[in-house]
Image (tube, rainbow, N blue to C red; front, side, top):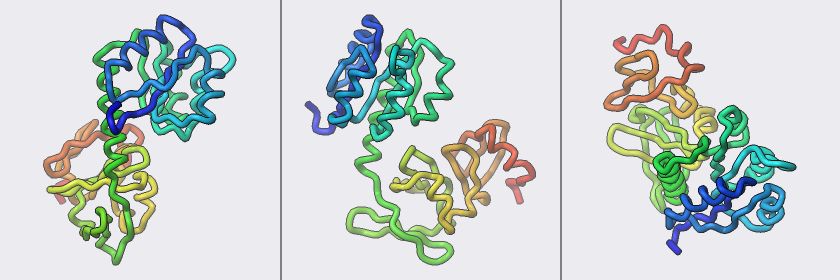
Length: 238
C-alpha cells in the first residue's frame, strides 16, 4: 500500500453501478478500498467508527440518500457523488461535495477527479500555516521552522482550495491553512477584490477584463457570474 494512500468507501444500491465504480477505483493504487456498500445505512453504521478520506456515493438510494449520508459525515475530507441524476448537483455542493459525476461513469472523467483528489491531499500535507500579520502591508508565512516575510503589494492573487488558500506572487506560490473567505476577513487582505468564489485579486494588477475572465500579469483567472457586477467601472489602465 502506498505510504500516502487514501482510504475510500463506495456506496451504491445498484450492483452493476457499484461494481463499475469499484473497477474504476481499483485502477488507482492511491485508493485503499476500505468498504463497498449497497446501502447508505449499512455504510453509516461502519463509518461512525471508521474514519476514511474519500466517499464515492450514489445519490438516489432508499431509506437514506447519498446526500443525507454525506450530511452526517461532513468530517470526511472528500466526497464525490456518482449518480444518474444531474438535477442534484446544486444540493450536493450544499453538503460540501468535492465533485459530481453523472453516470454512465467515463474513465477520463473519473481520472480527472482522481487527479484533483491527489492534488488536494498533496496540498493538505504540504500546507504552510498562515501565522500572523504585522503592519499594514506585511504578512509572515510559516514555512517549517522559518518565517517568510511577504509584502502584500507583491501578492498577485489568492486562490481558494476548500480549507486552504494559495497565495500567488509573480515568482512564488504559498499554501496557507485558511479558507479564502476567512483570509479576506483579515484586515491586510480587505483591499483584495473578489472575482470568483475561488479567486481574489489585487486591483492594481488587473491588466484586462473580459466577459468571463480577467488577466492579471501573466495569469488568466475566471470571473464568477455573481461577482461580475463588482468589476463594472474598473479601469485596468488607470
